[in-house]
Length: 166
Image (cartoon, helix red, strand yellow):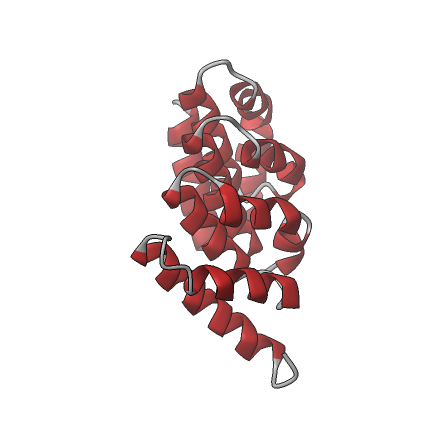
């Protein structure tokens, strides 16, 4: 079984709420996941960063942080997908890497990575600086339509989450 197959199995176990089986699978694949995240091959790193979310490995947030700073857009995107998944019920995951997410939203060369960073920010707490960055991006005529639309929707959602004072 490959890491990606094990990660898919882990995702299925997590979806069914089978925590004990998921924990066994995590411990079995922990070392291989770490090794893949340190690989010279960006494809192996991308699989590893994606697997962190599928395994629901909250202990690997620092490894995801490295993925957010990876030179490969595929790796950054995989790390963002995992970050979004891990932060659905835990906004602290997004809040812990918020400055990196702001940097990706504002300056990444890859629009898909920028959109994934925007989507990840929706799971964090509603902070004024994040809402401002997203609102500015939504109004930026030079940004792609999909990116502007995503930024506008997330900014609006965060404003609602924040309440009337923001």
